[in-house]
Image (cartoon, rainbow, N blue to C red; front, side):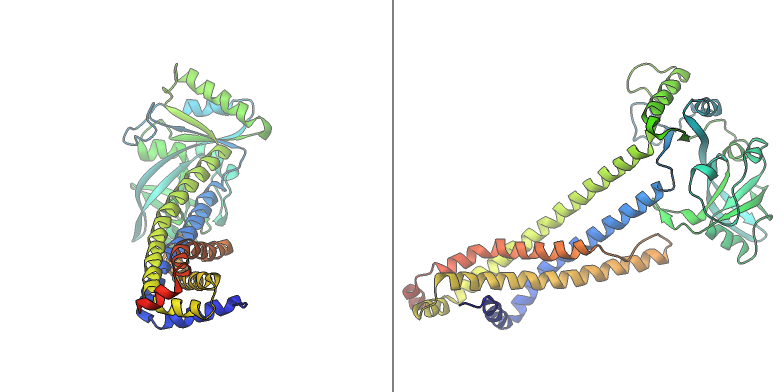
Length: 407
């Protein structure tokens, strides 16, 4: 048979004779491919979301935050050793240009009859210069406002809309724990990130949060911007040594803080996300292998059912390679149809996830990388070829006389 397309034409006609069997086999393959498409799309979107949150920080910045000595995962312990004096000491490090400390709190915010519960970011005033912040109204609070303990606040987009609607918020006063705070700025919409709606945050000077809301004198961490990016690793080591001296720490594993550059943080996130993606692909690969075994079984049954046909074709001149490629074509056709159906289902589910994300205020993209479709289609073909070879070889090796006698 000189025309390869003829194999697929015959394969298609044979599959039409067993519609239910064909559908079930194709559907099993489609589920695996759909899962692959959804997983890759979700992984890419999650990666963009996480790295997008890191992008608000300058690559020339260093993060210093508290941690439980010897156990990074224990979040139940409250570390209170990172003081405001440590923040000022880090500010004096030679290559450090700007610094802001941060703390977090949760409280109810009120304006007239409207109120809501918000997460408070207690950010130092220089955060407005170190981070990438866009404002719809007003701007960030100043250094003077922070050090004079002025009760000022910057609202996230949704909080502003909840409290003020379309009215202007800057210059108005909102109340937290019964204390008035003057609105100096409103952020532009940022969407969701890390499972948190960033538009439902408010920003208050960190020292004001300490004194007027939490009643503490410690911080969760510091973000420092360096002057000379080429010396960022040396600056990191200098901060590490400084903090150990100030906290009187000797020996490995006893640090009650952690120092990390933004480049290190990005690499760590990429490594974690790549590991998760690989694990999910491996799990989905198992389901595709199961589907492939099903294809082998179906094709083996098909060979048994069509033994007489095979023997007859070989007795009138069909060569072994014709029989071999005929059955490989049938296996490939099943997996390609499963691949196409799986891509359609996976794309539909991905767009459904996108619309749900939009409804719940999370940042999500409807775009699916082109390589996802190419990879899924090629992968389905590889599965069909791999699992179709054995029954195809079995068919091609049949003795034509014995095959005819079996009828």
